[in-house]
Image 1: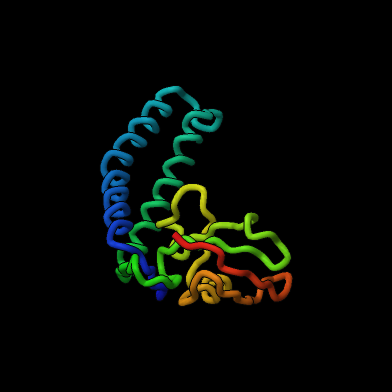
Image 2: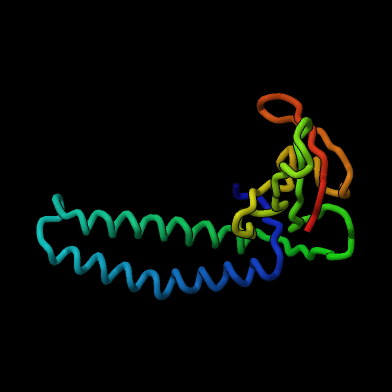
Length: 158
């Protein structure tokens, strides 16, 4: 993980920096208040509020470390809207071999940090992501999945 470079757009970088600032200022202050209020309730060994707050603090600190890693180890990429080929930050509609074109699945090619709502993610370094990059609508590609070789056809891109 230490050597991993995260390819992200400028918009995602700005979003992550804002989230990091919020978590390290407002988030940490608020969770400290919640923990202190829970401590005042008494015996910590049987204090559910305290344990829940500490658990939430741990999750928040983990997210802070995750964002910090991405921000420190990123490479900015820019999507060319007119390229016509699958690239970083493309949303691709694919149909698996044997399915009808209307039964497509949408995949976002990029980082989980950039994922739009309601779309699956295919990392550019995953077998599917690698197979799709540089391809166009109408192309069929094969990739190695845990269950064997799968074939998909690109039926759309947005």
